[in-house]
Every structure is written in structure tokens, then in C-alpha cells.
Image 1 (cartoon, rainbow, N blue to C red):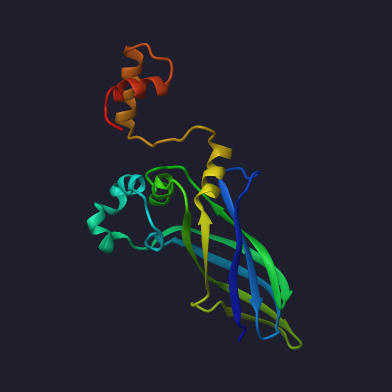
Image 2 (image 1 turned 90 degrees about the vertical axis):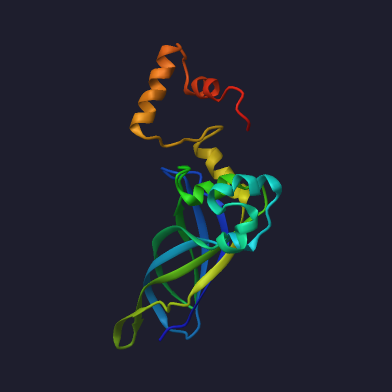
Length: 210
């Protein structure tokens, strides 16, 4: 049985992807000296919000996710951010590989809501690994599973996520609306002769408190 150790060397904004993407640079070490032919790697990326502090503004913006600050001892729990996978080429001893982390700016998604509410600091991540390992030895090929306890932790700077979103949505974001609400909004815009959605939403907000 192979013995694996995973670590995250870096997480950075991927500038040339077709859609918003972070890339995690992984180091994978195999401790028995066996030759690894390939790995079909799967990963669950979880955010652990209980492992950082929040200023007053962040606490206010996170009420929709975790409730009032007095309840956070019960509600501030780890949650799944994404699931992703990659194929690791053959190696012996250790190797480094990139894992694509596709992201969304849809504020209906809990991960995007959480990240959008943060002003600074780090995002505590835990990457849980699984998948199939293909080994190669003198007697042929073998197949085994990555042990269930293989994981790695990484504190990703909030600025990395903001940098990525600025690449793909410069000075903008987007909201998904129910079709009926969108039709009403479009009707309001047409009746008042407005030329942009920003003007329309700004007019509706009026003097509403921020």
C-alpha cells in the first residue's frame, strides 16, 4: 500500500482560463518508494470559517449566512466550497501538480456569499483528497485507492479571490433573479426611460440604508 502526503504550496488566480478559476499548486509525496504510474485525483475543497476573526463590517455582511453574532458558536461551521479533479502524471518519491478550482460570482452560492463579505485576511481552506492510484512495478500494474484521511490545509489570502474576480468581472458582479422579478424590473426600467441596469437599481434603492 502506498503512503501519500499532500500539501498546498500556493493558490493563485489563473489569468488565462475560459471562466473564473483559481489554481492550487499541490505537492504530493509518496513515502514507500513505489513507482506511481498515474493518479485520478478527486478533491473536496471546504471553507472553515470558524478558523479566522471577523471585523464589525464582515460580521454584519455575514448575518445572512450565519445569523447574529451571538449564534456563531453554533452556526459557524465548515461548508463545502467546490469539488474538482485532475490527473497526476507518473512519479516516484514526490511531484508537484496543478489543481483547477473553478469559481463563480453567483451570490446565491454560499461560497461566493462568504468570500464577497470578507474585507481582508485569509480564507481557511481544507482540501480532502480521494481517487484512484495506478502503480507500476516489476510484476505489472496495480490499482488502489487514496486513503480517506489524506488532506491538506491552506490559508488563502482574500486578495487572491478578489484579484481573480477583478480579472473576469472588472468593477462588476452579477445577481441571478427570478424570471418574474426580472420582467418587473425590465418593465420599471422601460417605463422610466432608463438606459442601464445600474441606473435602474440605483433609482429603486433611492435613500435606502446601505
